[in-house]
Amino acid sequence: MTDTLHIEIVSPERLLKSAETAMVVVPGSDGDFGVLPNHAPFMSTLRPGVLEIFDDEAGAAERLFVKGGLAQVSPDGLTLLAEEVIDLSSVDTGDLASQIKDMQEDIEDAKDDVERAGYEKELAWMTALQDVLAA
Image 1 (cartoon, one colour):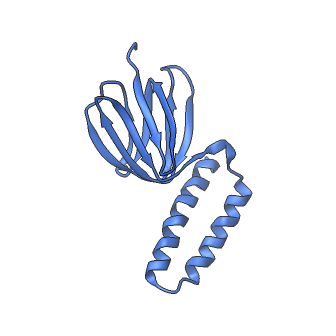
Image 2 (spheres, rainbow, N blue to C red):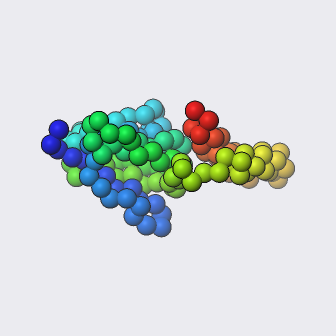
Image 3 (cartoon, rainbow, N blue to C red):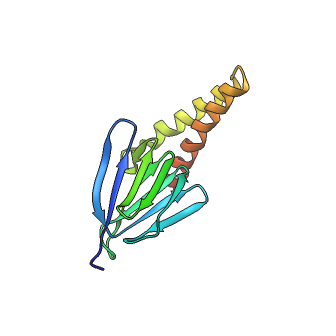
C-alpha cells in the first residue's frame, strides 16, 4: 500500500501526535473500527479503550489508551479529540488498583447522584484500563 493515512491526536491541552500511518483501530462507542487511507468520512464518539496505530501493514501497533472523546474521519485523515491519552507502558498497575479502590469508596460516600455519576464515570475508564493491562 503506497497511500498513508494522516492522523492527529489532540487533547484539551495540546497536539499529542501527528503522523502518517497505514491503519488505525479506534475504540468507538458502538465498537472498534478500523480506518485506512481514503476511508469514507464519518464521526464517532470514543469509549475508554485501546487505540492501535499501525505504521505499516506488517508491523506491530503502537498502543495507547484513550479515556473517551471524538473521532472524525475526513478526506484529510483521522482526527481524534481525546479527553486523555495514556501510554500503556507508563501505567503502574499497583497504583491503578489503589486508585480504583479509592474511587469505589468515593462512590459509596457520594453526597448525591450527580457526584456519584462523576465518580462512576472515572471508575469506568479506570476498570477498562485495568482490564486492558490484565489481558
